[in-house]
Length: 280
Image (cartoon, rainbow, N blue to C red):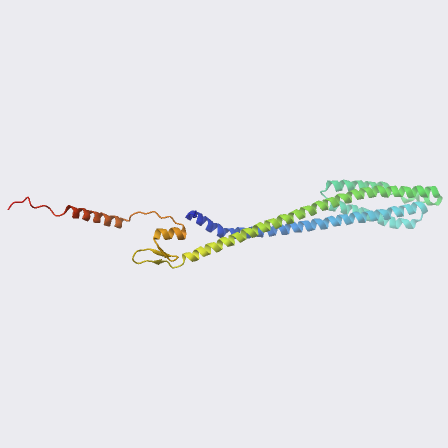
């Protein structure tokens, strides 16, 4: 079944417009992909920064607890300066973590619990225990060491939970990024196929136009058209070459000529008038 003229026009404009639409879509896709990649990269870098801050906070907490215990056991004031530096670093770390995890309610809750635990376990008044180390015994040393281990274990559990939640969020973000990459690849493949089809249609249209520009040989006597070595009537040529169905009718000139010929033929059949009935 040959396509109609309307279908051919639709295919023509579709073939011309599809490459432009595909180009616009590819431009949009590249823009979206670039934005998604930038967001994913920034989020991953931010997450690693938060994880490093957790590790840094834990290190400062260990230092603070060690210097606190050293002061409790010996009463030497040279433990106070590193203890105070560590506590200041812990406060700065917690403030930075709160800022970096703003909007994440679970992490804010973890940090609030961690801050409370640090204040309860690590903050003390040096003047109240200034001479505690002078009367230390083996049992008190062991008890204080055990107490320090319990403190650190409690704090480590809070830090571990916060660290695990951040790593879980990082894993989810990586999975989303992988899904975005797969989606982008599929869409790119679809657009490439669409462009290839559009180019194929354009090539077909150009070939058709080139064929339309060819010279047509018409018989000057019979009006037949030469097509692939055969002489065809015009309506047959149009049907084979272009799929155009032709209907037949008469022009005004041909109709008038036909009527004149019919009238002349009728007069010729009637013959000359009969004069035998006339008398001399």
